[in-house]
Length: 277
Ligand SMILES: Nc1ncnc2c1ncn2[C@@H]1O[C@H](COP(=O)(O)OP(=O)(O)OP(=O)(O)O)[C@@H](O)[C@H]1O
Image 1: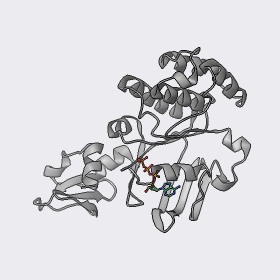
Image 2 (image 1 turned 180 degrees about the vertical axis):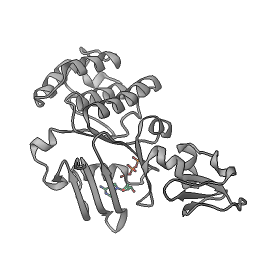
Image 3 (image 1 turned 120 degrees about the vertical axis):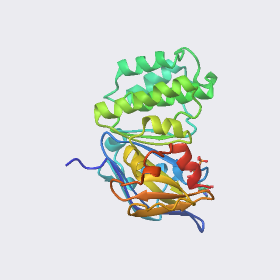
């Protein structure tokens, strides 16, 4: 059995007296691409920073590549790729010099992958990093985080500044890369369609807690937005949330939905919106 790349156990975090994360339990296994969803201020960045030991949790444990998040060795860190929400650095460098320096920290750097992605994002190597657009700086940060094929990729809204074409290409390649090399990916995003397209698993955080998590395809089978007026018998399960129009219902295991609910799959955006309505 392979051990998880990242495991949060009973994580609790508060700032001053305000709880932000409560009892968070999540596991990222090799080959998994987990999309972390939540409204602004839900605690996504906080959770990702806790994973890397950049912020300390108040209680609970994080195992990151089999080490505590609070004691990550340089070897361990060299197997993690991280792109923060607002990547910065290398501002006085040209793109090519920034890459040369960055590359020197990583013995496993894959130059072919780097070049492939540079041309895909159409980044001009002779430009100063400070003169790149926000989206181009984000692309460069992604190349820097991926070209050493880390075992664990942690990305905080990695594609928010990319145009739809770059976003689409990046997201599908991300998935392939993870599968190919047995890496794991945890990324936060507001773009539910992107998450739906590439994530194998999702976690939705609401009010500091993980409200929904699991394999996306399984969740699609298990969860239905049940109109309040519908009185048909529901399979065993539990109500995740009552919105104005629906009971958001998760069935246990494989669901035996009544005919009127069998076909009423909702997409991730509908689910996300109703969970917050
Ligand atoms: N260092 C800090 N001190 C005090 N409060 C903080 C600190 N960092 C984050 N917070 C608060 O914790 C909550 C969660 O913030 P976080 O940045 O994790 O949310 P997020 O889900 O990433 O939001 P967004 O989608 O807007 O990026 C917010 O209310 C934020 O104000």
